[in-house]
Image (cartoon, rainbow, N blue to C red; front, top):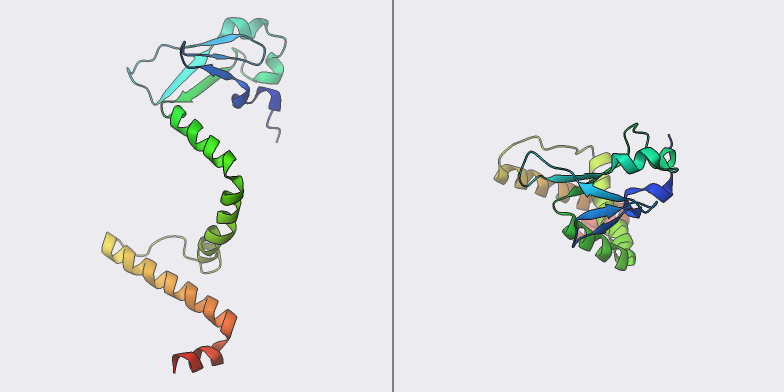
Length: 153
């Protein structure tokens, strides 16, 4: 499956916050569409006239009409999160190795993909038992059963 031309991914479209429009990689302005809702969750930007005449249209979109960009109403916050992630990539990679591994093991190796009971207190108890069994399994793998029994005694 082809993901399209990287030169025309959404992050290559530059947003002008003061004037509320996007500029495409070909230099054309995509303006905000009118929405039925006053405060939509996703704001859409397009310029079908420019796309119809654009030499890069086949690289940019498969749509016959032209390219459309969607912007979340939370996009400013998402941009801050993306910037922080890029600044701290080493920390995020380390977190993946340390923190995410137990959850993957619990989900796949221990087959705990959903909770068997309902209500917050019961789910908390089930989570505690799952974590206890994960930690017990890890201790047995490190020390062995004989050494564990000796330590407990």
